[in-house]
Amino acid sequence: MRKPRRAVVVASVRDDVGFGRGSGGAVVAVMQAGHQRDRDETVAAMLRDLEAIAGVGVDHVTHYELNVGGPTDFARNRSHELPPVDETLEMYRVARDFLAGRG
Image (spheres, helix red, strand yellow):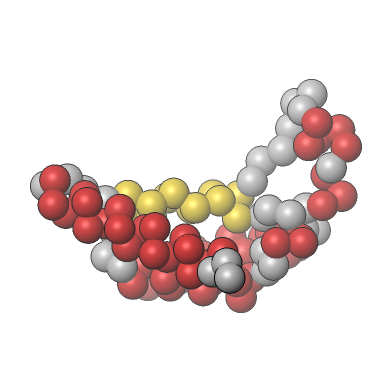
């Protein structure tokens, strides 16, 4: 049975944090918000991911919105799969407030 995506991501980040700490380096996590709607990319899901990543002890989180542009397949044919602008703005605000509150 497959683990849920979030459980796999958190386990992977936890392993990476342990490796980074063991190597004496800083641990940075990069997250992208505003992915396809069919992957449960909601404000609540994004916040759960941020809480999980912050909870495993990363030193820095870079969090940004998926930016679709240019002559890519995604921009031309799949932009309907993205959340509406008001939802991505809410994701930004929630993430900003959460991360600012964690320093």
